Image 1 (tube, helix red, strand yellow):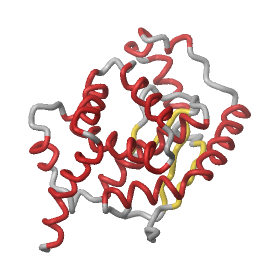
Image 2 (image 1 turned 90 degrees about the vertical axis):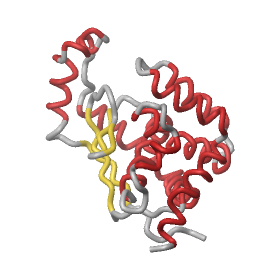
Image 3 (image 1 turned 90 degrees about the horizontal axis):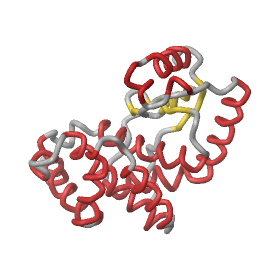
Image 4 (image 1 turned 60 degrees about the horizontal axis):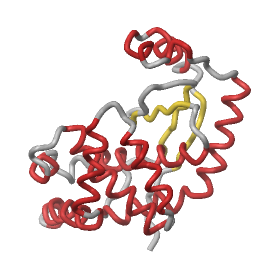
Length: 214
């Protein structure tokens, strides 16, 4: 059964944020060590074309992804619109507000947007999901790892059971392995060891009974 209250995803260039991110990417000392000082932002025409392609690719899969993540987690979004702000460069995408770099291929953009939307879905339901749940499930893990285990488990469900595309899954895992932060690869390792389905069941069993009794 379709979920009724999935949000409208609006993908757009943010001309106010872009200069701030361009300056940050080119002048931050830590980013300069990682090669960002040689990075050149794309021309406005190029970024506009990329955003057009992002919208086209996202539209092909939007309904399946939004319906899929809501259904498997038994959660609903609490907002009608989610703005996706595209900037020329961004060393790390984040979900509040949702800001993404314009350097992705359309396929990678959809994968990354799906990741961020799972974070938003969980954030929208903080009243239903006590913050202590993840700490109880994964007491020895870092906060970054804890915050990505269920996200990755949900992504694996989407890749394998909705799109039936193991290559997307493997690509995402390899990307995490290349990160300078081991917390991401640690989260994937836990998903692989415990199983995405079992993790999601355990997670839901922690918060669904609480909300049924309210």
